[in-house]
Length: 166
Image (tube, rainbow, N blue to C red):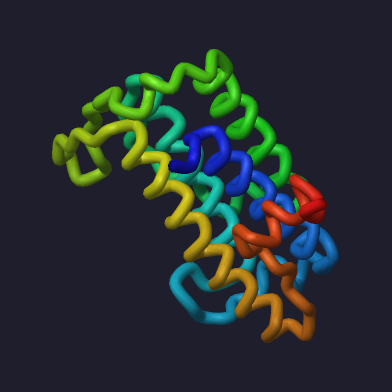
């Protein structure tokens, strides 16, 4: 069973890989309308970051009702800073490493004013899968811009973080 902190470490690693690739884009490429779910690299990246933000807030017991506005993030650097703040908040939540946190149930109100409740474990899995989905969309957009997207596979993360097997 993968620890929640390990899933979040993978998610951070993969997000950083995507951010590093996006930082190579100029402002026009970053904001260029290209279709897809959110229209541009920026808009997709901001959605990914905002989703991580809202889940982190929910883990802390609040139910924010606002979405991030991509126009508030004119550069990849501005999204990177936002992600760093989110990662710091996530780290605080999991700082004690309590394995009993997996089963903690958290109730929240979504943007449609519906009340839902899940275990923290289910929420962390959802966040990780959601971010992976949108990193895949960003990879496609990067290819359309003539860039080579990074590999963000879990096993590559394990190889890079643990090194080769002896």
